[in-house]
Image 1 (tube, one colour):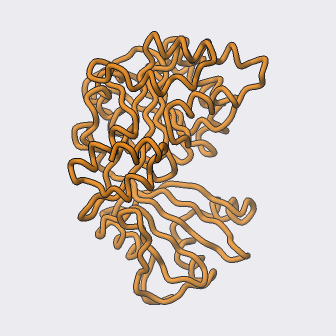
Image 2 (cartoon, one colour):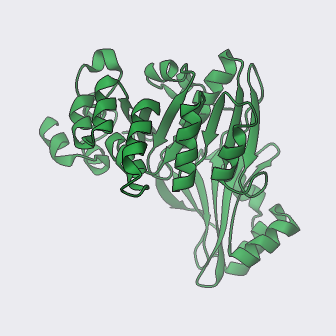
Amino acid sequence: MADANINQLLQLIVTHKASDLHLVSRSKPQIRLDGALKVVNMATLTGNDIKALCYPIISAKQIAQFEENLELDFSFELPNIGRFRANFYYALGEMGAAFRTIPIVIPSLDDLGAPAIYKQMIKREKGIILVTGPTGSGKSTTLAAMLNEINTYENKHIVTAEDPVEFVHTNNKSVFSHREVGQDTSSFATALKYAMRQDPDVILVGEMRDKETISAALTAAETGHLVFGTLHTSSAPSTVNRIIDVFSGDEQPQIRAMLSTSLVAVIAQSLIPKIGGGRIATSEIMIVNHAIANLIREEKIHQIYSQMQLGQETSGMRTQTQVLVDLVKKGTISKEHAMQYSNKQDELGKLI
């Protein structure tokens, strides 16, 4: 394919402020703009076209890994263009590729318009803070802004374990050890185990996807470290359930006890299209106070939601429904989009 190279395509998504680029066999390139896919006016690609576009940006070792494993996850930076996360894969025997933009300039919490409670929770010396939501909901950006806040004001050693490393922080007051799974460490669980010997103050776990990683993260939080992690859950109470359900029945009482003392907060995030273009991050926030800690310990997770609705002016908590109602009232998002993204459509329907 002679009418573009990969640098030009990636420049295109940066110029248009798109989030993703998709190269799929038997299709023209497509970019994701404000959450929706848009076709790029270029020739239809074959698997060989995609290979010719993509192979120049990876090493011989990565090519060998990709051809052996049929999957490849990595991140990279193109000078004067931007930083990207990439996934190469096969579909019906043909190569495909997905690229996501990663801002080089890391936003502050103020840049994101984040709730004030975020700045309070990250001042904790120990515990675990979870940012959850579906793929593409801005979890990595929120976490990067939180670490940026710590880096700006506190002298800490921050160890990150990611697959792949996304945001690369410049040491300011804090010092960062960025570790990439597969390159610098063999797994998230291994990275967490050895992080204990690296004198960390803060640990970021890119994904808490298995029992070993979750267990290690909880132990790190209990032993005096502030741990940040992500899960693909859509609400704060479902996040607590997801963590507990990873463990067998006889292990669950201990995990509930650990969670009740170690969990600081759960932020369940989604990105919703705004009226007039662009997207806005909505976040359900659960802060673990004495009452919620008791509910976790006593296996009464179903009561957490009603607890989150109480005394929100003082607690900093909020439910997704309340956030959506406020955004509809302000004319920021449409009723249709609010309903589409809602976890509790019946409740939201009555309120709007």
